[in-house]
Length: 250
Image (cartoon, rainbow, N blue to C red; front, top):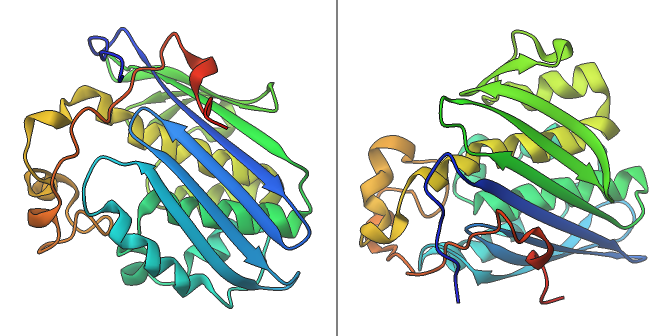
């Protein structure tokens, strides 16, 4: 059963992503407070040949309907730069499931880089006063540690004056290089998603309640779809003190 969410400011948003690489296949699993997704991306060594996914746990009834849209990635060249895949097109990208599309972009980059199997563990403490320290570990090793104030960086110094907004992926690739930037782009998304811990999503019937804030950001939060995207209750889990339970079904 889902764990009761701690009062905001007392908890930690956690996300684990596992990448397993085979000769022509990448298997990706993600779990966090709000999601449990499985994705398989196939390729021929040069480009994407197929994508399939499963929404094992998702917050809205419309989330699985975005899976067929991943077919837009078929034919996409394998590139180490996440931003190359993000250039699929603003309108198309926003019609996707944000998380499945993100996972696909990360998988394409890691495949192009020849990365071995890896696990990202991300922790974003609740920001009671908008500031907090967030971390990314890769295979248990600390790779990134940021202090952010809202969507703006406080530290480390390398990130001074930067923001977590849409300009971040291109900036971080230009500064850190494509390989190091992949983890930073994954961590950026988790920082943004973590704000969902402030809300009791079960209080609303459908996703249209959030259109004024994030309308047009993804498949579910699209006008005409959001009104039919019914909240799936009891799908928010609490992993603050249970990080070992993430992806425990594997």
